[in-house]
Length: 432
Ligand SMILES: *Cc1c(COP(=O)(O)O)cnc(C)c1O
View 1: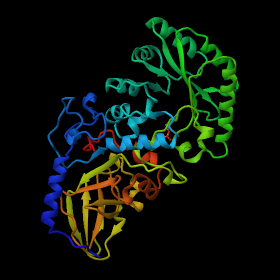
View 2: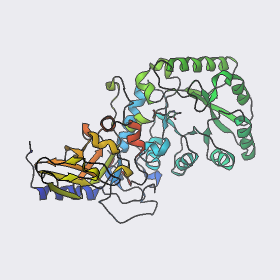
View 3: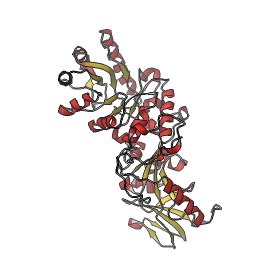
């Protein structure tokens, strides 16, 4: 059962040094100077310096706090793979909600430099601005609502709007006039999602109205699919026929787009691909739920949730672990405590069957995931020492793949990524 291993002291020392080399040094959110993010593959490995270095906000190298590693090489590879899957169509990369938890300031500039990526899309105004402040130069689409001074600020920064309301044309025309510049838009059509977008039944005249306005340039037209297998084709047909009718009347709709990650795996892109695809999840290396033919694309998780062991202890029969004593040892066993918990974004339900990888081996989570701590069972042997680096989510072992964590914890894979705490320090992995 116990695998042969190096003496514990040697293991822990190596783990300690390795962790120290990649130790997080920065406060979360303090993005590094984006101009310095590596441009292409094959750049030197010195890009592992911590985010925030350029922000001037350094904290002492407290290497025992959990952190999140972002892997730029994986992001680039996934983008290329997604583009291939999309038949070479341009990719509008969705980086909403802090780039699905990975960190907008790290991810934005990396994706900005990927040739297959035509632009970036967010839902919140602050994120559109953050992308520009991070140095992103490609088109940025705001797929959410904005008003007043914010709209002007966004237009000044060349952010594209996604109008869907009756008065959006007039509003955005005023913005264009005040700034004396053209405002770019992607028409947002509701073909059955019932969330945002101009309802398709009365969209045609609205589209004509927008097209006739001075100061507005239609760069794209899009819709969001419900990802319900029987209904997506209905939506796609509504979208297609509306676009055909508008184009028949001479409207320039720019690029049409509808496909998110789900459509890339579940739909025939001859029907759903249009002129551009608009995925988020797959870029970060996770598969949409129920993805058919995962072998259609090889994605690599671009993140690692990591922490270091802060305590190793031996339980005697009858000893319990964590709140509620939901785990009680039946025989002598070793446990290790990690200072990372559900407040950091690791699912509470990880205790239902998730494992954590330490030194290449997977260990089950036991007891309870509390706000700031997770406990794993090592077994009969003391295989781990304090200081060892653990991976709770990441590409290095099947047990911690985001899709596997989601499956075992009984949560959506979107939650595994997007619930990662914004307070976790983000570290850029060494670039390859
Ligand atoms: C989030 C979002 C996407 C991307 O969805 P994924 O499932 O992550 O690929 C695309 N379009 C809209 C409108 C979205 O809100």
